[in-house]
Amino acid sequence: MSALETLITEFARLPGIGRKTAQRLAYHLLQQSRDRMTALAGALETVAERVHPCEGCGQPTEDGTCTICRDPRRDASILCVVEEPSAVAVLERAGVFRGRYIVLGGRLSPLDGIGPESLRVELLDRRLQEGGVVEVILATNSSMEGEATATWLQQLLAPWTEVRVSRLARGLPVGGDLEYVDGVTLNHALTAREALR
Picture 1 (cartoon, helix red, strand yellow):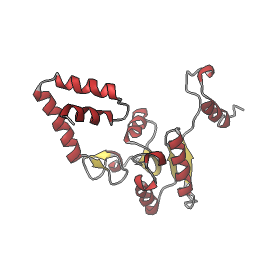
Picture 2 (tube, rainbow, N blue to C red):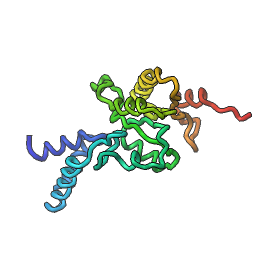
Picture 3 (cartoon, rainbow, N blue to C red):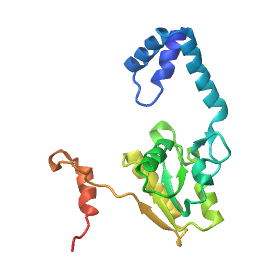
Picture 4 (cartoon, one colour):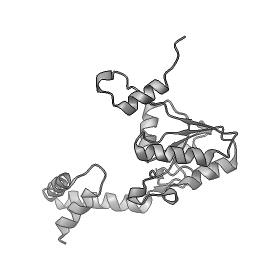
């Protein structure tokens, strides 16, 4: 396989990147100066050498523990379990969650060969063993795999009767139009409806 074909193949392995986009990226890089390509390659190499999962939550960091785990102002009694680090970034941007996280590093997907052993559940187990956790929020995606992961986690947490287990609310988006809402979302919205009086 040629160097260009190898690069296209590697780009195509990235999430959300199809073969055509991978080709566009590769050809775009070919139009850049050698210094620019070397800088990109160097950045990738540096990330590969320095960035690793946080010992406390699994989020990418260059230190032993990430800034969130080191922050004494965070509420260590509330854990939010997410699939990927990108979910942490979204929750942090919203600025409404002040607890700590557990980043699983994926979701159950038997068809893709991802089972429980592929997820960082030991981080959650360690935090529970240390004590002081009063709530675990399951913030997995509402995809079929995310739902399966949340159900599995709920069963895993069943012995921890003193710990409240919750799930992010699901339903209609703000500004959403009922005409365009899928059946599953509408079902969740009706099931989790709130009383006004």
